Amino acid sequence: MHLRHLTLATAESCTAGLIASLLADMPGAGTLLECAFVVYSPHAKLHCLGVQPDVLREHNLTSTAVAGAMALGAAQRARAGVIVANTGVADEGGDGVPAGTQCYAWLLRGGERKPAPRLFVETCQFPGSRNEVRVIAAHHALARIPHYHALWAKEGA
Image 1 (cartoon, rainbow, N blue to C red):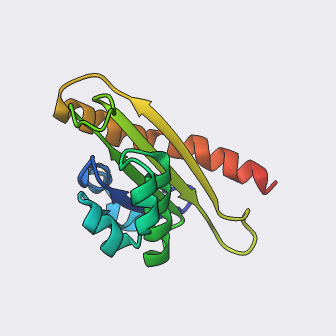
Image 2 (image 1 turned 120 degrees about the horizontal axis):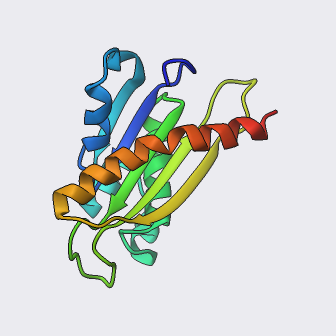
């Protein structure tokens, strides 16, 4: 991300700040990480990120629709070129969602000469204990940035 002069903001639920923490562990983190929103409850998603009540009502909290709305809400509150959002279930959370299910959204945007902003979403399921799932999920969120950045950049070529 340093090479591309990208900055990142996170909107995290299940990972509870681990994505931002992984970035903060890196030298020069101040040039990479703009901000992090930890929005664990539906109330926080609504009031801190502006996720619309109908999105929360019509979709499971562990859904790409909610992850996408979290990313869009963070994008309205941050200037970062990359927004990563995560919501999920690390253990048996109920609502018919299997343990380890993680939903993500990556929003990429740039200046005038860049491609139009683009939202990418995906759902994964990871094995392991509650904390193992959260750590794997945080690493996955960062590991997918180059893939989605390449797709986004290709659209503008």
